[in-house]
Image 1 (cartoon, rainbow, N blue to C red):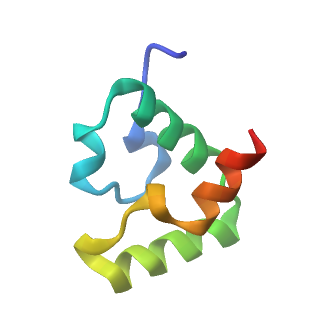
Image 2 (image 1 turned 60 degrees about the horizontal axis):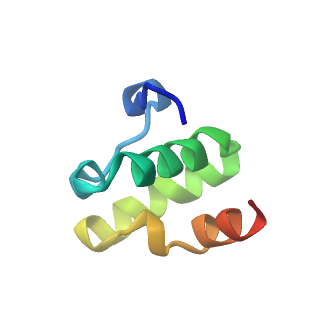
Image 3 (image 1 turned 120 degrees about the horizontal axis):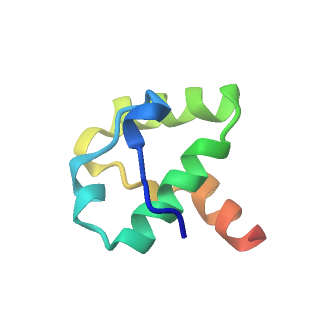
Length: 70
């Protein structure tokens, strides 16, 4: 596990509730977002924009698929 989870470096909007998760869960989300390509980042931004506060990265298909592949 890394010592630093730097969501700001991703230059993506991060829902506030993510900061309430454990450090382990935050690191997992950070690693998922960090490995996304341009197309997945676009999809993330669209989903977050359209769903607003009901968007949950942990329930997204992309996150679930990524986690299952780990």
